[in-house]
Image (cartoon, rainbow, N blue to C red; front, side):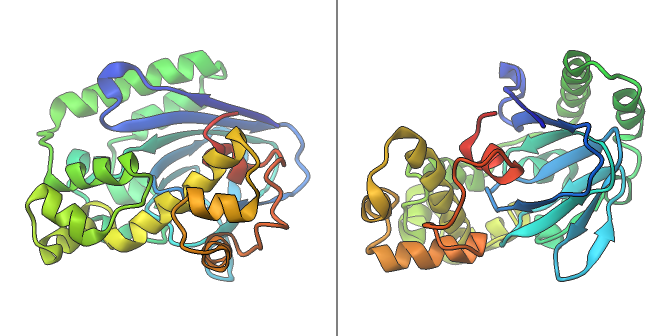
Length: 269
């Protein structure tokens, strides 16, 4: 299985976190767990599509997808040889670019064409006819530059809040966040609902949780040490939070396994 993570060019960094490519020539069905990481995604299948289980029901995915914020883990299963290119966009980018209400996409992975009409139709055809990964990234850069040029992109106070959350690795109180950007907590809640799709408190939980995967690559401090470093007041709180997002106890989770969840959360191939 091939995993690639590609950093966007500097002029697209305010809307794109990264591009990613996954390929697997083995057609045997294999389930993958996907865990929240705080970023919406635009996804294109250029080989066989996947099946998805979000709410205890398996469904076939379309060839082009839009994924909103996910509050818990879910499962994917390939239906044949896999080829996927994805765009992990910045948390507020879809509202800035397309005026989307992200709350309507929370815990959903929908057909991209249904959500955004024809904005990506030409790109989908280009990606399917381009087996070369480097050429795919060239097409993506060109497309998103055109989108950004045509958008009335203006920074919002919620962008400042997101910066605070990432700067503090999710370890920031909502009241402090609101005060820091000059909003009431109620105003901040409304902005997060529209631009992110989750409450600011829940979003900070996701980012604080994802910090665990960065810390565990740097050192092995043990569970008590990880709990402290990632801002949990005790080990039991840390374990409960980890299980809430992964469905597993951290002592049983395969941090070293080569799978989609670790690829996305460790932020490297």
